[in-house]
Image 1 (cartoon, helix red, strand yellow):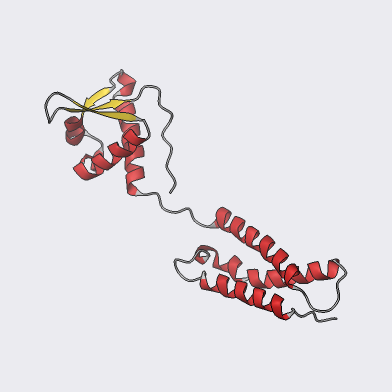
Image 2: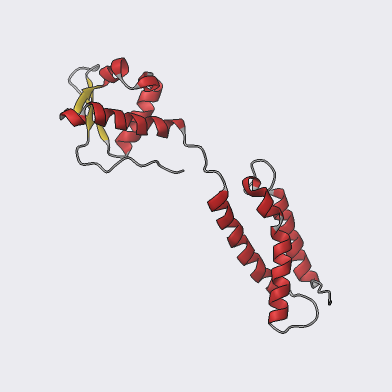
Length: 176
């Protein structure tokens, strides 16, 4: 069995990559949710670089270009592993409130052909915890930004309305 070694430049690339991955295994790091797979990536880069080296008929030390090729492939697969297997980030409360309020407005008003609701009515009889002013304002702002509703001001300062958009698209979570 023949032992292959990295050239000095290839070794620097490989060690830098291994350190980069190791650093990002810590809590909050980009690979903390997929520690198992990420911790093996540097070894996989070394193996793949050796395979490229041998399959191309090269002799001597594994060169930096073989390591670069292996790095690109292994980083891509690690990213895909993370995309598929890492838990999704939590959905912000404002988004959940907006989605819930939108569904509530449509089931309680739009289904009856009512498309304008006084805003203060939403504070009084609205949907659960979203009746609080701060959460309601945040949810309404999101729905207005998405074109799900329009916020209207009446003649008097306290005369504010929420108008449901009749032909808007179904609500979709906004990913940040």
